[in-house]
Image (cartoon, rainbow, N blue to C red; front, side, top):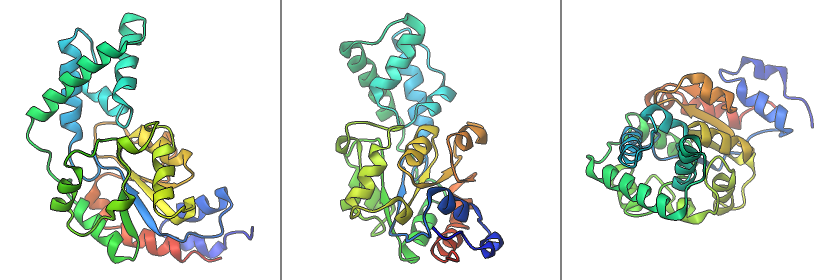
Length: 257
């Protein structure tokens, strides 16, 4: 592969050129940007964290709300199993997992519906306007998901490319969700897409899929947790990202070959 031109040192985001060079790609050819949902499009993680804490507490287990952010994207069984192994010295059985997750869902559904994340609409709109197709890769189920997305982001998302929990065998941090996203979008290669994530496990999944990953730290975790998982760029809000995403896309698609 030809080396990335020194002219790319003038980029506002030289991480784009660094990514291409480290992955032996000559350039980006962006077709889609894959968005996580909870904590990226909707401010739903506080409700998830609170519900996990209360459900665990109900059954005599302990999962602090801040720690719940570390498990975002993991399957419910995986999260429960980590806590039971830590506290009880054994894996959880299916009956335990079912009742704890049911209680978690009850608590979560009792809370007011999470609002759209500030700056999320503007970010998705900017992606669409740039000629790149936005889509969703989420660990959530699909119940009412399309309706909610359409209400908050009308006409912006390509629903046929969406990946939800039922579409994959393995959840994040396994790369399968993002690999499935690339497959659905037309058997794309990593240089044809990017990932926007707020959770360490999601960042890990995107990196493992070979994608350029933009982290948005919308929760209580330190930036280092996301950067240590390999995020290429980090912003502190979706509003901040919305102000920069058009430049990122332009520079990605106009790297000096």
